[in-house]
Length: 440
Image (cartoon, rainbow, N blue to C red):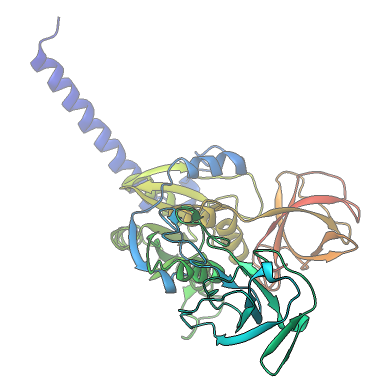
């Protein structure tokens, strides 16, 4: 039987061998010419569903912070809010009119006072008396109903009503709108204008919300240049980084620009590590395909774990997802349309889930084709469309050519139409699933 010292020495040797193999792989990715690079991706092709599940398994809501409830629109609640008081807290007039006693029937009343919405009554309505009252004013003691002004006549301080009342008519009762202790907003609720108003109504001025994710965006490539600077012939302006930062902000995040990293292993690695120090999520653009200078996947494999490197969908097959130090990393394709579509399908739901959104995915609907379309023969495709209501149904109209570099196909689109792979043209009127990405 081998001694413990021999076993330890053997383990150390194995570890040293593994380190040497990793160093060799990194060196290979840095230096091999195209003729010696892989011709086939080492990553299995995942379905969209499997890729989404892999991401979801690594997403958990971020920590929370207390913020001003009256300026919290767009944030996601981290705790359920219950009403600390009844609304209304006292009986109030539902309309402009007169507060009175229902038991007096149709008998004329003496008008003894006028009560406005902000008034504190301090008044007792006895038999045969009434008080003018404005909408929202507290009901005076003794009055158990009110009558709208249009159902009355008043002459010389005497009120005549046109119909009999019963107790409670035209009165907002205590707790009619909200009762004390009633949950009014649930954890995971995305706060909108009405929600901010509701918080103000019940007197809640501070709320716990999930922190906004910080998203760092890195563009890669020797051919990529800043939009406002000089551009050599054949080079491209960096649209992806700015589009992705805008998409991250639209998703409720803080966006951080990491600039452009040239096609150099050490430079891209340093930029990626810098992004991971600053952000919760890192997005890279370009460098995820099979070329000699596509370095993102080898770098991510070195510093973290690559969970998938290919997805069976179009556009965006080389979309990559990795984690490192608890941070999420998405390697997105370099083509502008592929980059944004991949963001919508995979990144945005993760960013919303990090914020605690109870419904992080975009809504899905069934839409009918306004014109025939040809599917991709080998992969499902997310085609850019304009969705609109017509004849009691939602219709999808293509934005034109669907090439991965044709960013204008995203302009004006408010939906992504999921077209299953196939060999036959789909006729007008065919009903397919569509993701709503804008106003319908």
